[in-house]
Image (cartoon, rainbow, N blue to C red; front, top):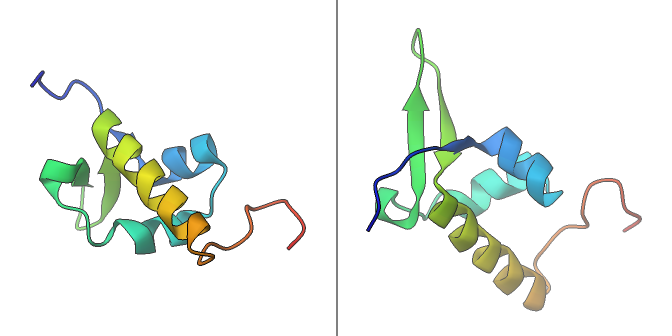
Amino acid sequence: MPAISAVFTIDHVAALLGEDEEWLHDLSIGMFPEDGRLYVYGLGDDGVTAFTQDGIENLKQIIDDEREAGRAPPKPGTAP
């Protein structure tokens, strides 16, 4: 397995996938670091959820599963 060379913040991934950030956060809660979900800390006490490239692929699969099961909200900017 290659080393992690980049991580992408959840707001960036939401924009990339055209999905709601809060929904992605809810979907990703069950993901672990080995699934590609990380928590990145900066200055102060605040941190942000971030994903590796594999994590984005895993998240896409979760999104597809939720859409197939009819449990997905409409994409932001589209009619319900």
